Amino acid sequence: MPQLVFTYTGQLAAAAGAAEEAIEVAPGATLRSALDFLAARHGEAYARHLFHSDGRMRSTLLVVFDGEQAAGDKESLMLDGVGTVMLMTPIAGG
Amino acid sequence: MTELDRSIYEWQLDLPGFGEAGQERLRNATALVSRVGGLGGPLALSLAAAGIGKLVLAHAGDLRLDDLNRQILMRHDGVGKPRVESLKATLRAFNPHIEVEAIPENVAESNAASLVGRADIVFGAAPLFEERFLLNRECVRQRKPLIDCAMYGLEGQVIPIVPGETPCLACLYPEVPEHWRRRFPVMGAVSALAANIGAMEGLKLLAGFGEVNLNRLLYFDTAAMRFQTVKIRRDPGCSVCGEI
Ligand SMILES: [Zn+2]
Image (tube, rainbow over all chains, first blue to last red; front, side, top):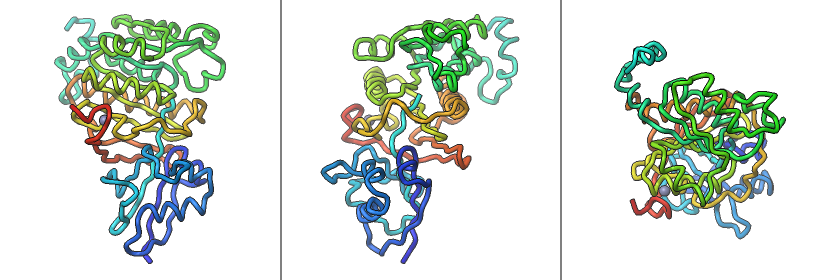
């Protein structure tokens, strides 16, 4: 299966314990399914930055495919043809 | 341009595309800096060095010991005194030819319109999203450019916002991030780096030279010394800028 690289920034990187990891994804996989897999791997400290408590994806999570913010509804984004997914959580530190 | 100005700014007057016209534009510009801590302080210093006409500094509260690892324009003997006054004194000593207005208040509902109203450009460097969103909303309403500068740990991010042309902060973050906290890890060199990237974006925008990173954000991670530009999108349904 193709390897997909995930990179993390901000609080999400801190929660994942790494700035980057690669997972295998099946053809036709959605971002949502990959995030569910990663959330199960990393646990609540990571998952809370991706999902609301009711399971919806957070509007504040910036999803970047190969250097470009992904367009459209995050829940239904497909991963076919994507090389790197960058997940950015908001930062505001002064 | 006076002989004194020419002498002070000689080295930057040679910059391609800048010149005396760029210097004049800076001289005639007013910048609002929202919070003058680890980000806003060094940012204000670089604007002062470049010869901006006027700085309006907004930040409430007194300097604390635990500010001193990053608020590099402050002084140890300023602990317990208003931050904004310490910064004003430092900036005035550094460049007495610019105007500095120190306002001992943070951006809030009560003052956002008047603070943004007196500036040509705004720099956002507050630690809380509520304050940043308020500044964003007001900048969009008044059609003023906003340079949003942020940092966390060893990472930084700069987003130049031109209302109507680029995504605004609410396009990217439609709600307050639930898990963001006022206290975050920080090192002074990282905040100063983000500050100076933000200062450069603002100076280019004001003086009309170089290429501003519009519709893109700059992200960096000094842990791995990785710099990355990300193309960002306006949200047509944005509650703040969707109608303009
Ligand atoms: Zn917007």
